[in-house]
Image 1 (cartoon, each protein chain N blue to C red):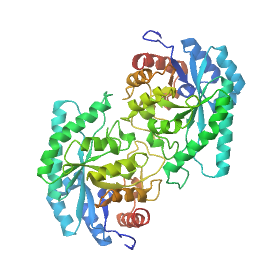
Image 2: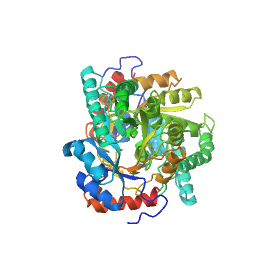
Image 3: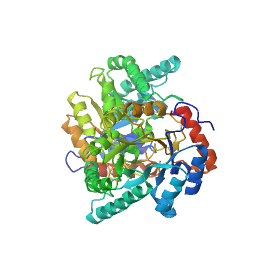
Image 4: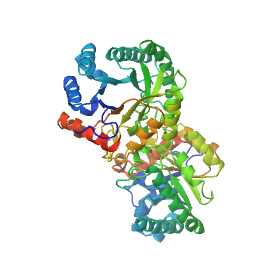
Length: 281
Length: 281
């Protein structure tokens, strides 16, 4: 695996879900061995391994943690459920701080059962962020609102476009609340370039994640993301857009795909790095 | 089945794919028996039955044809493929005229294999419509650009929002090119109310189609539409929006769902009418 090409692998971050078959030590060793210097982590495997232990493991391998996935799920209407969600999100902030990442990715949550008022659900997301943002800021963690593809609007994330994510983020100071630009979720939107420029001007791009779009979508559609270059997304064009908007952070590869998980983790990681050099940098 | 309620069934149109298990005569008889006065038809079953014969069948049962589905698939880049698509669309216009409907629904087509330039593909759609619209207008047929949900952007329809559909439609006279407002495809979009108002002001709403959004989505996602009231779409709110925008046409129920197709057609039709009265009018 050569790291040649403009920028090489210096900006590459591997979200651990891309190589979900790996334990945290395997992830740390595999990334370090390939010359990858950053990872994105998920709460559940980190909790299982131990937050402090995971933080030390990454530090010992020279790995930066570019994001923690994920907080959010803020759309419940009942006070008790809302309080529980906020409590869980404060814990997510604490974990992010302990891991040494400044970015907690937020997935808003879907429409509650029987609810048909998506505008009100989005408003509840904004209200929860208003409560969480100061807590996060005190701990050096920025909240990163992620728009998920509209096919997830009912059951996972009522925030569906970069424009919607920015509409919420802009109610708060830029250093407290940013947005995620994820190519898989946003590639289809003719307003995405405008949204990226708007986000960049305000310093709101907290995270740039990449995956490709491939069809047919699997049942449930969650695990259908494509390896870089296998689909129709103009990954390089979107990377250039976030760069032109002033973003200097990591390019985090986050692919949920059981076909990748069934393979040897090291082989998948090498392929991701190769595809990254071919299609992204 | 009572037709009580504001407006009763007078505006209801049944798209034949909703009761795909039925032949055209069964559809005509079933609708007439229930007091439904309009249908939306599809090219393949109409061609198989005979276009003139289908037109007579509908007339004999007092049924208006509110739309013919579908023309389009305009995104090929090669001249031969483009010429073939246009030729096929002229045939679709002829069929629409013969059926006595003034509305040909257009589904734009997806990205060609290996193509990552969705903006250029959308432009090719507009170019094809420029060639087709005068031909259709001479035959009393208006082209209705349908935005499909963004989950179809790569493989079926590069036009994903009402705003995008209007951006194309507005290049042409309103009497030649309109748009479809389909609740299934558009419900998630925070700009849909604005788009409906914009479409209404310009007299561009050529068709209003309804289906509900339910999850989990099935593999391939095409056949996952929900019976009215089973999902999270504010059907009544969207119907009120198109009404407020000046639309006075049919409310066409178009549900692709194998679970409905497995049942008795008459039972499904009665259920659709009941749900329509409960959730739409």
